Length: 117
Picture 1 (cartoon, one colour):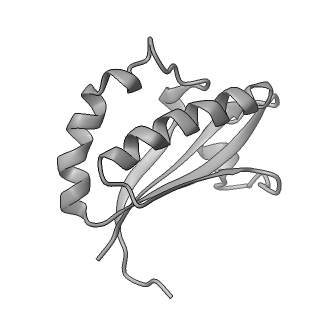
Picture 2 (cartoon, helix red, strand yellow):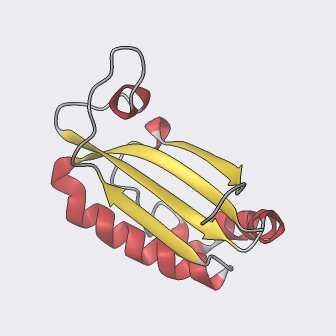
Picture 3 (tube, one colour):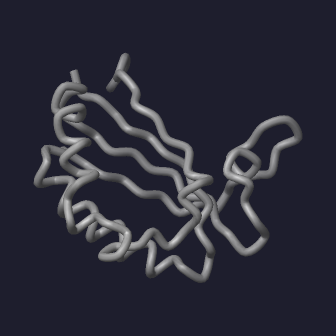
């Protein structure tokens, strides 16, 4: 069964094109390590919550947009083998491909797929 890494972040709205280029560069490398699909979504209907919400979770500032994405792997095993290699890949190092957002407010996790139709 496939495996998913999901994430939510706040990106400065002015950095949309920089973010998209960052994603393109990363996607090419991730696919070399076995990723089946990488999806990035730019928030355009992401309401503020009273108790919880995407904006609250990432401490979105007024000049930022919430992004939501996921990476589809063939399996958790493939993902677990690839991740250390991805973190060491020189093409993904911050001095080569800096994140155009505050990575400290990135929320991410790995998920077992239990339903896919």
